[in-house]
Image 1 (tube, rainbow, N blue to C red):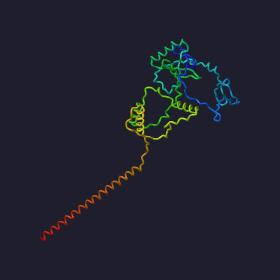
Image 2: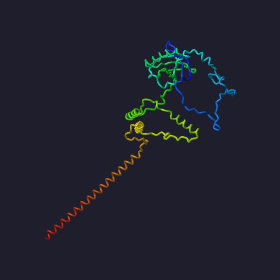
Image 3: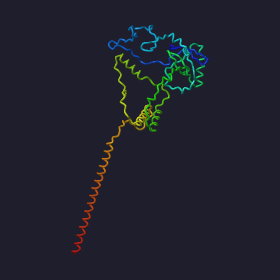
Image 4: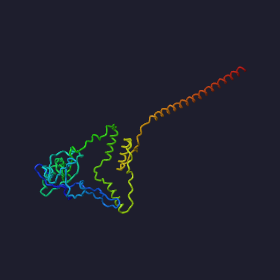
Length: 331
């Protein structure tokens, strides 16, 4: 079991449950040292008194509250331990609520609560069973790291988990960050819902930290003198562009289907939306008029040719009639 971070007791009415607080998470991040670029020597941080310039050891450092630039009030650890606070060494359960009523933004770090001695086994199991049967979570108060905190107790795989929570006044309002009212079509909303359905998963257990994997590969390549890995394609993000929202949604849905092997339907493209130019409509109008004029002129010429042909035929008929008349008179 990891080293306990804090020891105390859960106060559940008149029931006391001795527990140890153990971190529920692990940090797998790759940490770097600050080094001197010239010789790769480590850069150390020293705590120096600003008055005499002397470097201090941890035993020479205490706490103080600055009332003003000229006055600081010293506070000792013994004075902090003697603060008359009921939650100084206890996780005091103050209420039970539905889990859905707690805004996730208020949840901070998570810890497992382990029994501190076999005497705590039965009351610990009692609280766990009560939480499971009531389908609720417990709200608790506890003091840790020189402040009183709000906590949330719930059951996870047979163990009680303590979530440290932020106080209501620590949550910033998003009112000024929300976008102004915009117009959306029902088709766009329906297509976005379809995208969420296409991307739905039963579990997120398969996700990995791709950045850490790439960083480990980079470190291994440099340490072994190998060629550095090539940058991933498509990693660079282009400048933000105004795109056809519906086309982007269609393309996203098709891409999600292809990634799942469902096969895509029709092709959808994402293109940049450009404002229409007024000159285009004028040009279209003028070209339309020119085309109409050409059609009118062409049809007029054709009619004229047809009319001319009619006149020629009539003239031929008249000449033939005159010749026939002269022959009859001569005979």
